[in-house]
Image (cartoon, rainbow, N blue to C red; front, top):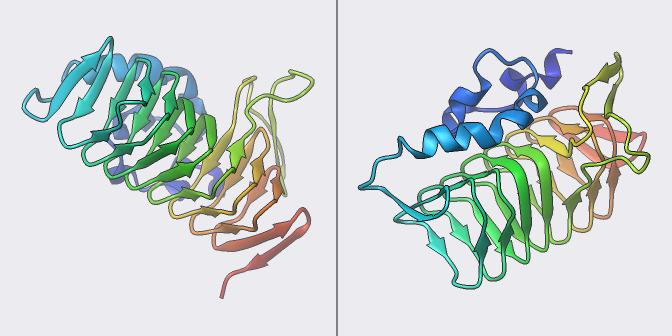
Length: 221
């Protein structure tokens, strides 16, 4: 399904991780590669722009990292990013340029493109958030099914077997997720779509849409 491809969801020039998507059709295919990619990329980052601040943790000199934040490697924190009070980065995380990781937000095995905002009490795991994507306060990605089975992505054109157990959400560029929303395992939201607050999202939401509730999705004008 073309709408679910890397090409349709993301502006690859807006991430330091551009090369991880080379030869890949669907974005979730790179989730298992994030850790090794960071390890390789981190060693090549220019020392006049990045500091190694921990074991396999590289942070741009212009990044603002609060003393109370915890960052476990491997991780890369981009230029002008903010990692705020009590943020918890568990590892395998790329935080893009100008991105915001807010108070008590937890990241694990993620790529945040440039200017992404996860600023208040968010959990983002096994997910990829596109350029300028924003998750409202308390919104989270649920990355494992309750029955622990492999995630199947449900689309109007049929189901896609992902073959993976941990799969949070793929948010396209400039997606807005309302406060208190749960993005269920295998959620994919197309570019420039809006999700109403307190939503429970499952499957695919088309680009340029307004998600009101399951079965009620309006096209933006």
